[in-house]
Image (cartoon, rainbow, N blue to C red; front, side, top):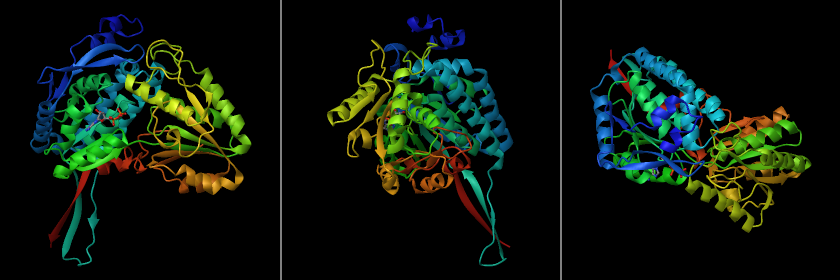
Amino acid sequence: MATLSMDPRLSRRTTDFLSSDHRMLIDGRFVAAESGKTLPVYNPATGEVITQVPEAEAEDVNRAVTAARRAFDEGPWPRMSPSERGRVLWKIADLVEEHLEEFAELESLDNGKPFSVARVADVPLTVDMFRYMSGWATKISGKTLPLSAGYDYHSYTLREPIGVVAQIIPWNFPLLMAAWKLAPALACGCTIVLKLAEQTPLSGLRLAQLLDEAGLPAGVVNVITGYGEGAGAPLAAHEMVDKVAFTGSTEVGKLIVKAAAGNLKKVTLELGGKSPVLVFPDAKTDSAIQGTASAIFFNHGQCCCAGSRLYVHEKVFDEVVDGVSHLANEIQLAPGMDPSCQMGPLVSDEQYHRVVGYIESGIEEGANIAAGGPVSGVDRGWFVRPTVLTNTNPRMKVVQEEIFGPVVCAVPFSDKDIDAIVKRANDTIYGLAASVWTENLSLAHKVARCLRAGTVWVNCHNVFDASLPFGGYKQSGWGREMGEEVLNNYLQTKAVTVAL
Ligand code: ADP
């Protein structure tokens, strides 16, 4: 704790928060774990422990769920007027915005990402999400329905909050993932237990303090910290939870489905990806090089929609791959708070070994390294150099499996292959996102239709907006986050029929 609070780049607000005693928000109070246990939070740029946070276990989960249940069944939140709920959401957005610098510092320190990126991406997108959902609070409505039985009945639907929601989030965009989950559930009138990722709990705990300040009634949002097995699993299985919304690995997503079966709670999942990027020969080469490099290297490749398979037409393959490799070689690795940082460390020791292991497996299976490789050259911290692999084949682990790091496999295709390349792009268990790079409008739209993915970007990648639904085909998930569609995750429909 002491080493970091001396970092002169951190603001006073951040050092004050870091040196405070970290507590979870349960039933409107800031509390330690019942057991008194804590878990360490690491600085990925140094491997040092920053601070400790509570380690919630089943009894803490039970306390939080009981509070959320009471707040839903008896409390004011689901019964409040939609405009009042909307106002609270807007207030949360304002408060996060007022603390923009502090949140960006916490994200950078905890996750490893560049402060400059957290400042222009993670935090503003969080603010947007709360504002956008604030507007939806007043626009949730049912329909009146004409019955085939005739005019002796008046029938209509009510869209009601689903109840107590468990939300389990990952570490790649800690604050933003909290916002993606909390904002729509709150707009719908649900109550929540949010479990933060054990690797990155700091911004979520700070957000919990602001939620309290924004005037949320006790028990409406409960924020807990703990490990997946110790806290996530009992939360996903809890009988008093009506719905679980999860973002994380496909592997854990499958465990969530099993855990939810006990009381048949509703489930939505935002899982892994192995997103293809298709560059056609008529693409604007410079922007394709910049865009496809950023598709994989943004957030150090720790994005579920990272463009990790780069299919480039043979006419421009060398130019594009050389360009992406050149950009990769130029990227400055440094701690996230360092002004020179263009790419920080990966989030954890585990993630570092996982990503380096994939690069080594690619080499063993015969891939060539066009940039990067398993050795970062940085003597401490969990840094991995942005890496470009060529000479891969479709069965290699690096091509099939989600690496979740700054590693891209570049593959050429020929004119004859257009249909085949779309087929190859679709040839994984995932279907989260894809991008297409071409100036040919008709080709772009045709390929967009053929790609089995929840998001297709044309001449761009990683463009997110609170209004755009995001989620996966195939094993990339169930349901959509953001946009109007996310409301379906947190509402259920009641049909009311009146005999006239
Ligand atoms: P990653 O492998 O990238 O860390 P995970 O899918 O393991 O992603 O984790 C995402 C979130 O799921 C984290 O909050 C983690 O604590 C939680 N989690 C991990 N295992 C379980 C589990 N068995 N049940 C519920 N939540 C879990």
